[in-house]
Amino acid sequence: MQTVHEPASLRAVIRGWRAEGKTVGLVPTMGNLHAGHFSLIRHARARADRVVASIFVNPTQFGPNEDFERYPRTLVQDQAGLADEGCDLLFAPEVSALYPLGPERAVKVHVPRLGEILDGASRPGHFDGVATVVCKLFNLVQPDFAVFGQKDYQQLRVIERMVADLGLTVKVMGAATVRAADGLALSSRNQYLDDRERAVAVEVSATLRQMQALMAGGHAREAVEQAAMARLVQSGFVPDYAVIRRAEDLEIPAPEADLTSLVALVAARLGTTRLIDNLPFSAA
Ligand code: PAF
Picture 1 (cartoon, protein in one colour):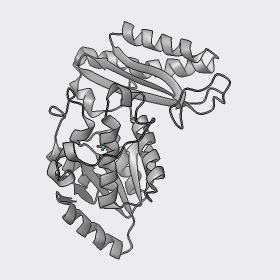
Picture 2 (tube, rainbow, N blue to C red):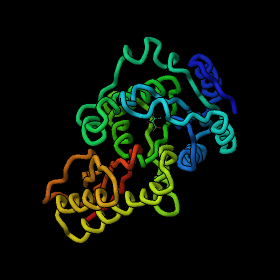
Picture 3 (tube, rainbow, N blue to C red):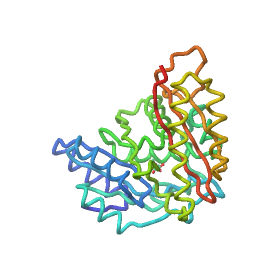
């Protein structure tokens, strides 16, 4: 597997592949790769002639008091893992390569409403950073498709909306969340948890399953959300939200609406670690 750091080198490799008529799949990441990321690489590997992964800890999607500085950077280990999974090319740019004017002066992609609610409200500007960097990566790589984890459910929806609204030709694919044996969704941030917190973290996915079961049992959405918040607080979390939303646009489902396509979403802090997870389901 080849690693390139400069956009010009990336474009040169991809130009060569395109001249040979190869299809290209992209897996954007921030590195510190785990089994969840490798499942995205395998998803791409099964569908494209050539697979590009990117590793870039994107400063514009972190708030001022968030974990940009301490976010784990493990490039050598990541390169070995990507090579093992059959990734063809790793793009690992410096900040200046993606933000030539500096992150503060960068042109921004903003996705109104969908990028402003839930995590967009808890982490103002987060989805501007995500949409902006993903738009840049799509423009540089010009892949046939790109694969994102469904664990970042709102992110996936924001990227789909950006692609549709800007008329980009890349196909956006979501791949299933990979979980530890006890149900905890894999995340690079799980390693911030100490042993006690790691044991408690399972409550996030357990709460989501309870939300699904209560909705399927005909309970009112508001009561289900309140029970979920109470359970998380009782377990020692400081929850940002525990909500049931329409899967397609993350808006509140009307009581009389069709309940076939819903998603339960949780974001909650445990100590200094913020965990997110979700569970798409039908309550019809
Ligand atoms: O999900 C991530 O790792 C990041 O948000 C992404 C999509 C690579 C953009 O920086």
